[in-house]
Every structure is written in C-alpha cells, then in structure tokens.
Length: 289
Figure 1 (cartoon, rainbow, N blue to C red):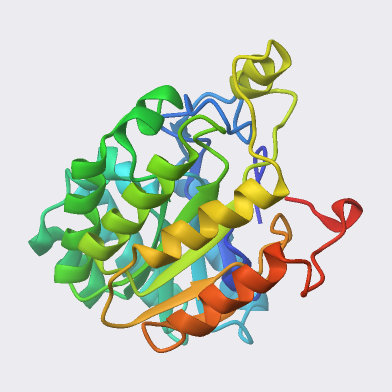
Figure 2: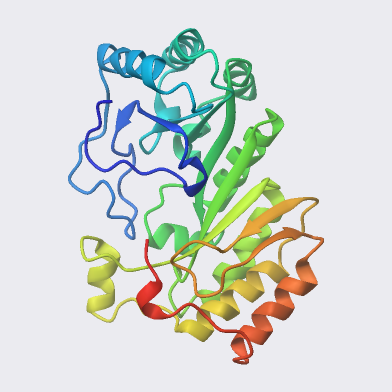
C-alpha cells in the first residue's frame, strides 16, 4: 500500500483497510492540529489508488471494512467519488462498510442526493470533527465554519441515512470560554442528533499555533477539574433520542462509554464522583494522542 505522510484514522477503524485517497487536509489551518503541518493537500493519482486496491484484493480478504484517508475525501468531485466507490465494489466485493472523514466546509457541497448515491455504493459512516459548537471558539481556532454550518452538515449526513460520528474537544475554548463551549457544544450535538460522539481532551502540540499562544500566556488550558466540569456541563446540555457517548480516548482523564439519554444521570453522577476524588482518574503519564 502506498502511504504518504501521517496516516490518521479513527480508533474504531483499527481493523479496516486504510486506503489513502488524498494527502493532507484541504483546510489545514486549525490552530490546535499539527497532523498535516507543512503538507500540501492533494488528490492521489488514480493509478496509485488502483494499485492499492489490487494489493488489498490479494492480501486483505479478512478485512470487511475500508477507511478512506486522509483528512477530507469528501472534497473530491462527486463523479470521482462515484468512480472510486464503484472500483472499491469491483475490486473488494466482500467489503461491507466504507467510512471517511468529512467536514462541514466541503461536506456542504454534497447534497442529500449526493450522499444517498454514495450510500448506495457502500458509504456507511462519516466521521466529523465538530470540536466545538461555540462560534467564538470556532473562530479562534480557525475552524473555517460556524456552528450553524456544522449543524447543517450533520443533519444532511443523517438525512441520507448515514452513521454520523462527531468528535468534540474538551479544553479547546480555554479557561475563559470553557462553560460557553460546553453549553453550545451540547446544543449543537442536540441539533445534529449524531449516532456517536467521541470526546477527546486537547493536548497542546509544539508544532501548532495554539501551543505558541499558550506559551505566550494568550491561551490557558483548564485544569483537570475544569475539564471535568466542562464535560459535565456538556452532557447536561445534550438532548438526544439515541446517542453513544464515549470518553475512552487516551487523552481523557475519565473514561466513559454510555448511551444517552438512558445513562445520563449515571454519567453525571460519575463525573461528580470523579471531581470529589471518589473515582480514580487516568495518571498524567498515561495520557496520549
């Protein structure tokens, strides 16, 4: 398989075939993200992709899922996506699920009809980096979209009958806007009604603008208790019909895996207990991205 640069995939795609279709991220300006710094976004040559499909056809018969990397495959024109999905079906007929990252900036260029067409060809899951539902925070981190656009994209994915997995970041608003970030993110999740929300905690990376802001004292990350309070307020403000909420990423202090609204009171109770010191938290040296 031909891989260029950093290959990032969601934890749930660990056993998937990873097919790199693009290199880098089409936006690549988020101040907290160092994944594709210095990498020029580009589409990979179709001949290279076909070579990888041939390799997978020979050696990946045990893997029933495929994840399309890198940061924003939905930025491809619809005709090229349709052709790609058709080739995946032809080369890998045993694959029963195609997944990819999608962001609102480019994802909103796809209509519900476009997404339905991709679903018919095997698309099952879209992973969306929501980060925050707070407009001031989204502007500060140069996300490139506001909360309203995030909601529209999320709702469009759901209208097409696709599984929507959204990621949010504790601490991304800094100490100053922590509460507003938590409230508004809960509101946006409620409006989008994703199937799954994965919660991560911001870890400042040296190759990012946000790290430099923090070094100058312009950004202050909430302390551990502040991050737990942020999670509490966020969960308080989520109103959903059926949601899997996970905080079991390695960056988090308190791992949870629950269903909302069924487990909401138990989750809030667990966070209160953690803040009171009644539940052990992940040691600092075990936290990682």
